[in-house]
Image 1 (cartoon, rainbow over the protein chains, first blue to last red):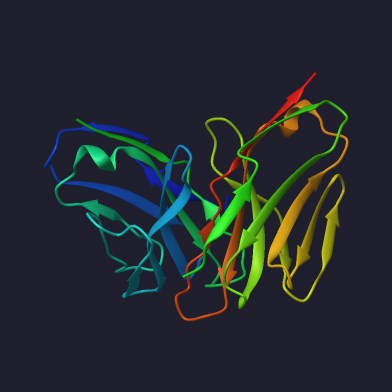
Image 2 (spheres, helix red, strand yellow):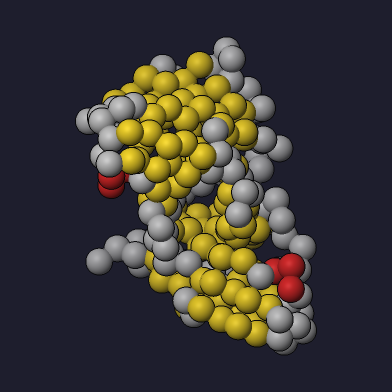
Length: 113
Length: 113
């Protein structure tokens, strides 16, 4: 089954404790991205990757890191989480950049206390 | 970068009536306009999209129209049903070199039985 898988689904952590949210797709998509969803603000792009070893900042990259060492995986790293990073996070993949359907993961609900 | 505004933020309609959601975008070079539906607790999923060389597209009860001159596009849902209750996001993809898909803030649609 074609899918985008994120883990964990739910995470509660403390300020400053490094964490990684994993994202994996099995559709051989080139383009992957991370979004955060906050009430009233819609989906805001954090980082995106056009292919292996090619990543770039989205609209809200501060406090986040990503890597794309393999085509299928695109982890999101919070080196020192802060309470303002409490949000619902979605990973998405598309066949290629621009003009193709984005397939979203199940979402990760992150709470930073 | 692209800026997408979406209205209204909430919409309540009687079952069987039509629902219309409108979005405006800022980058005249944008060329791809998808609409995503997010049911409660679920991931966003593409329901329809339109490209800049097309003025209107229909798929059963949903349709999207695009006015490039005015830089706005709209989602129309006819004969609404309870399962149409969800959050709807519009998005625009600028044909430039930043490769970022920009989303509107979302519209919460409630269909009253």
